[in-house]
Amino acid sequence: MPSNRSSQGVGGSTFEGYRSHGPHPGKGAEGYKRPDEPICDELTPALERDGRIDASEIEVSCNSGVVQLTGKFENRAAKRDAATCVEDIYVSATS
Image 1 (cartoon, rainbow, N blue to C red):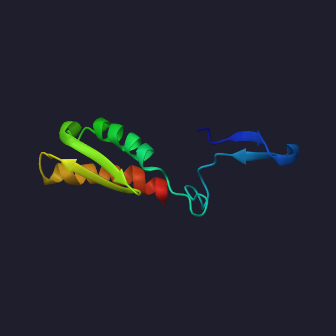
Image 2 (image 1 turned 30 degrees about the vertical axis):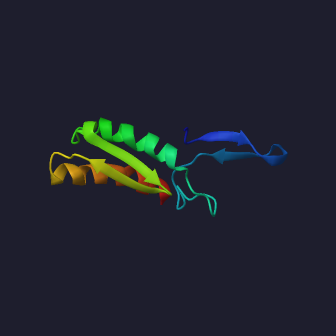
Image 3 (image 1 turned 90 degrees about the horizontal axis):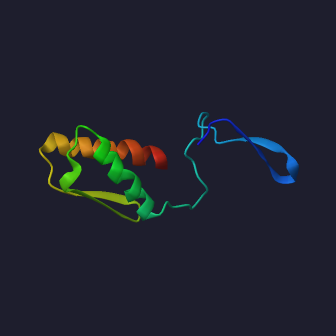
């Protein structure tokens, strides 16, 4: 999304939309919960792109916003790397 975009607001006034800086990026509407499917759809390719992780035997599931990684990991470091990858994406999106 562009970070500087002028849009027409209510009554024809303009406002700056999609700004990621400031004290409130990532804060959504009260009570909003992100659906589970898009979370998995975002995290699975991120694990695949991370060069530290062999994601070929990792399954990503999400239930009520709780992400679970299951499967075979090369070692404990790979498991931590996968968890960190998920946290870097998902936790920042929900903060």
